[in-house]
Image 1 (cartoon, rainbow, N blue to C red):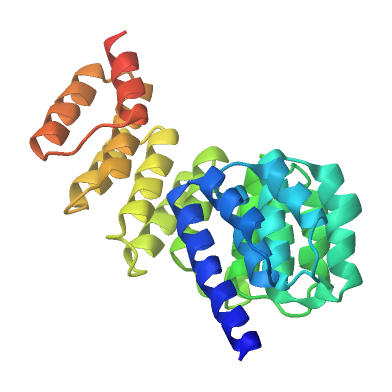
Image 2: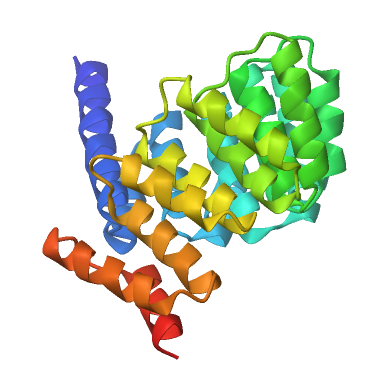
Length: 288
């Protein structure tokens, strides 16, 4: 009976911890965590995740090393997020990756995918590639993580080449894949033919009306000097959100089309869309 009550108490306190973490109330989460007489791996995972997801990366890593129970796969995914936020390659490579390997997570797909992403965020695409190349089983997340890692490190040509290999391997592109590949394409000076092939592929993919994919597509055209094509994509999106408006504003500003940028902002206001920091930066640049 006592054990049952204890489990219920931990479960309820973990829910409170999770609520504070999701609300960004880190001080309240930490006070609750410190006051808990008993904790389990879920308690530690929730607290580490709360730190990592709210930008308290160093605290997340410190708490990881203070754990009083064996870490789980989720623990490592959370602490890897913290390492990436800090850009702390030394901590990631020498300690946390080694610890994950020591408990057999070097064959766990989700952990390996996280490591690929985190090494890329820390500026080490070669370590990402070493992990990716060693994996016997890869899913679409693995491919996306590696393409993203190359792009994060400024290796847009390698990102594009890997996307072609992914295609040849028969791995179906999802929305995230298109966003990553469109971003790399716009920064890699691809040929007009290659851009049109990618454009057509997006149009036939079922993701053409997705606002995030649409924003990436118009940004690709804009970065490649094809402003008219960017406008076509924008106008085709029936209900553009704030991110899409900002992407189009950015392209107008970068092409020196201040009047069009201001007209688009007026249109945005008429649609009751509230501007954010990116919007205001674009407006300042348009007016300068």
